[in-house]
Length: 520
Image 1 (cartoon, helix red, strand yellow):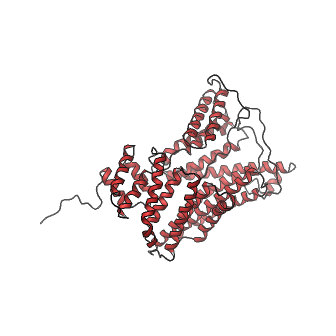
Image 2 (cartoon, rainbow, N blue to C red):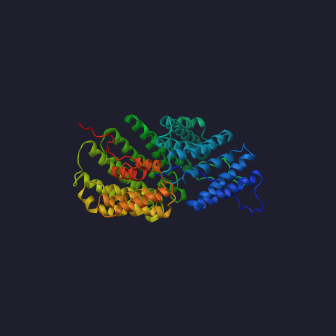
Image 3 (cartoon, rainbow, N blue to C red):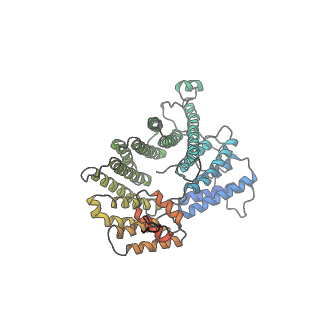
C-alpha cells in the first residue's frame, strides 16, 4: 500500500533566464538543483525522472560543499534522497534501501538543527523517513537488533508527528481566532496533544517570499489540509506500531489511536470547502489509510485468535470500494489496495482452515476463497488498465493467478491451465517491459511455465522454464537472489524450488542419502 509522499517540494517562484555558464556559486547550484527536481517531477516516474532527481542530489551536494550551514539546502537534499527511495526496483532488499533512507534522515536532522523555530516541514519529512526506516528494519533478516531499532525509529516518528500537529493546530486556531490565547487552547486540550473539534471554516493563506527558491525557514500559514496531512501520516505510523506489537490487547489500543487520528482528519476535512482542489484528494487519502489500517487490524486479530474476522476485512473493503466507486475510479493505489485486501482475506480463511485441520468446503469456505481471489484479480486487472507497464502490479496479478491455480477445489482444477497461462503472461510482460530488473517477472515467468507441465501436464514446458532461468542467470541472477525471492513467496511450490536448486545451483535433491548402503 502506497505511502510516504513528500509534504512539499521546492518550486521556482519566477522564471529564470537561460544560463550561459556552468554553476559556480551556492545560488547557482541551488537553482540548478531545483530545475532538475522539477524535471524529475514532470516525468513522474521512469528512468528520466530518476536521472533528474539524481542530478538534483548532485547539485545539492555541491551547493552544500560551498555553504554547510544552509538549512534549505539540507532540507531539499534530504527530501530528494527520500523521493529516490521510491525508484528502487520491486523486491530490492531492505539492506539496499536503508542507506538512502538513512542519508535522507541525516540531512533532515542537520537541517532541523539549523532551521530555528519554523521547522515543522523538516520535522514532518524526518518523521516520514523514520517511519520508512522502521518498516525496512522490520523486513530485514540480516541486521542485528533490527526489531529494536525499528521500534526506536517508529516511536520517534510518532512523537514527532504529534509535536508537528500540536504546533500546526495552535497556529491554525490562532488564525481563526486571533484573540484566542495559548492558555485557552491548553484548556481545550490542544497543547497536550488532545485534538479539539474544528469550529469554523478558514481560508488558506499563501506564504510570500522574496528568495528564488522555497525555504524551510519561511513560515507558511497552516491550513486544514496541513493538519489533515499530519494526522493521516500519524495514523499510518500508529498502524505500523500496532501491527508489530506482541500483546494483542495493547495492539488494539494503538489501532484505536490510529483510528482516532483519521477520525480527527475527517472532522478537519468538514471544515473545508468541497470546491477546494485539495478537498477531494484529502478525502481519498484519508479513506485509503483507513482501509489500510482496518486490514492491518484484521491481520493482527487473526494472528492473535487464529480466526479470520469477516467484519474487519469487509469494513476495509467497503472503505476502499467507496473510493473506486464514488470518488476516483482511476485511482491505481485504491485498486491495488483492494487487490491486497481481497488476497489477504482469502489467505486468512485458508490459514484458518489449515490451523484447525479443516478442508476447504467448496460450498462455503472454498467458495469464499475462490471468489475473494477472483475479486483481487479483477481489481489488479483494473489497475493494469490504468498503468499497464507497472511492474509491481504485473507481479501481484501473477501471484494471485498462481494462488488460485493451487487451490484444492474442483473449480480451480477446471481453470488451472488458464490461470497458469495468465500468470505466465503477466510475468512475461514484466520481463519485456524491463528485463534488467532481475527481481521482477523472471522467476514468476519460469514458475508458471514449469507448473504448466508439472501441474497441468502440458508437454515441454519444463524445458521452456529451463531456458527462462538460464537467461535470467546470464543477466546476473544467482543462488542468493533465487533463495531470497523464493523465501518471500509463501505459496511457491517446494518442488519448483528444489528443481531450480538442483538443476542450476548444484543442490542435493531432497531425500537423497549420501551414506553408503549397509550390507550384512
